[in-house]
Length: 71
Image (cartoon, rainbow, N blue to C red; front, side):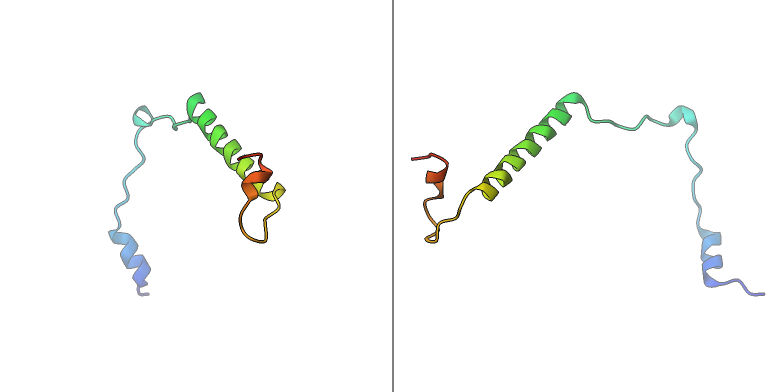
């Protein structure tokens, strides 16, 4: 029985063994500062989207800043 091309190719692939447990590192986790920054960015984006839903666009395409109480 002949070997398939995939079987031939897999015989040439040299996969390294997993490193020993003493050399493995713990997975990286985000610290408090990174998480708080991410929360701030998410809240900022959510605020912009909420304002966009709440505001009524002007037919002329101008004046929406007045709805926010801006001069």
